Image (tube, rainbow, N blue to C red; front, side, top):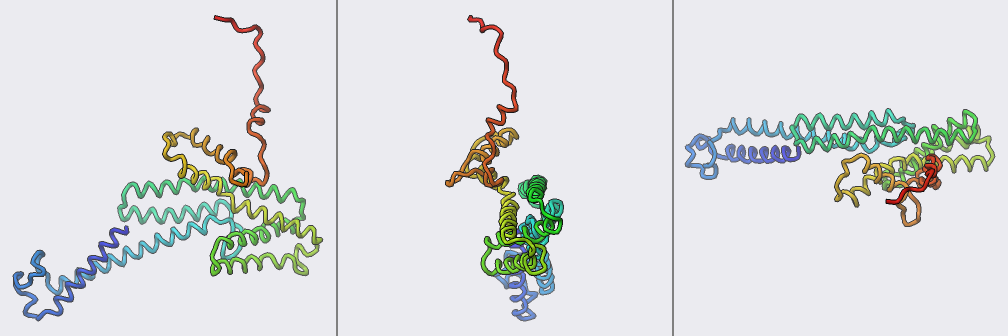
Length: 312
């Protein structure tokens, strides 16, 4: 699409220059033989009306391609905010189906434009590759949502307090974490929205105002932890893909599902950062049980042979 847009810009420029030459030339010279215009001897002579038509056509094509480029840019920009658990403008929780639908809609818009412009098969294949991640992301979001719900249920809260945790407190701290990754100009509205969600809960008459200071501090700590779980929920996929891209793409056989699962397991449970933590430990907030011990507990050992093996 960028090549077509550059070609349209070049056509507009050439048509404008040629039209300017025709308009600046005397009227009698506009229809002179081709030999009197050495600068355009390589092309068929073009009248003023033809030049105006060429300029209008090139301008329309340039405007059409510019509009399509703006649509693609808007769709690409919409994918970023679409995967957030919290609406960054309203502070409302979003479920896995809504997130997947928003991402899918942006990808479908990009594919439609790409097919209309006849992009190469490799470009369409990259779009398909991005689309294949959406179901996995939806499954991850659904899993994390269930995990957060179970964690809040273990706190044994009253329904109003539990609703405040889900709908207000956790989203507010999620917005704070997102704001930490933005520049000051973009982070200020996010911090302000987070404060508007959180402050009424602790004011007089608020849902959490009747709790003791210790209970309030505990709920805030849990809300921060669960907000971090929401934000890190895609690290399993992104971190594994990034590691494969950095270290393992020079290997062969990555198209085999079993081999990819082995790399994923190694990344999540065995590779550590300089601080000594694995991806699974950071995700769940605790060191998972030894996989080897779990296998030993689940698999029955074979009985001893009845007689010693025969020697050859």
